[in-house]
Image (cartoon, rainbow, N blue to C red):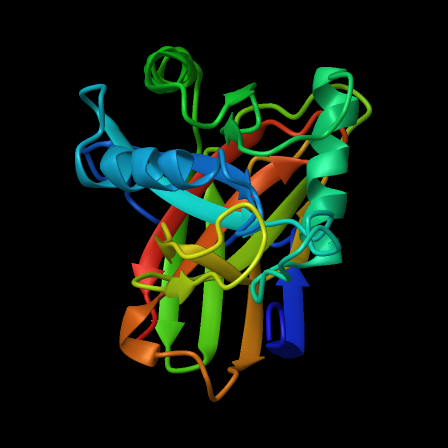
Length: 252
């Protein structure tokens, strides 16, 4: 069941300085969120595009972290998406406020919380990734030990005045597919980009902070295939929605 994992314990510390973490030269992680649904006939091409962006980033210097976020407002229209979540619909609604779009829709891509566009538009994706690479990004270090996850944030760009930053933890599962029996995609086998199985805020960083840390212990759903799971952590402005730093690692 989507978002069935539970955070058993969380300890966050945003005032004490975290252990020193050296910056490693390499690609900049970029969060690409896809709001999608198995009930939407326009969504499969967007899933395909997200997979392509992950496999072959269209811009040098980008490491694409793709997150398929299945919304639930299609569930009453002929087919219930087994990955859908009201929480992810709420997350999309927060972006609607941020971008002042007329409505929420699928498929929608959001790049680093900075740009939104129709999720199957490869040209728009490339431009949005190019744009986000020109902005400063902080550093996230992940310490994954079984179901225990530690997140350390350093060198964070300044948070917008009056805002704060959330440390968000995600579990995503790749390699999922569904044979759709009803609705707009009736008779199709849908192969999904990495699907968000769990998403939660596990810590906060004040507007004047440039570093912080948080830890969580997760209870994983027995139906998830552990060898296909990845842990993703990112730091996002609470109101402004800009993602300031991110990282991913396999769930060992």
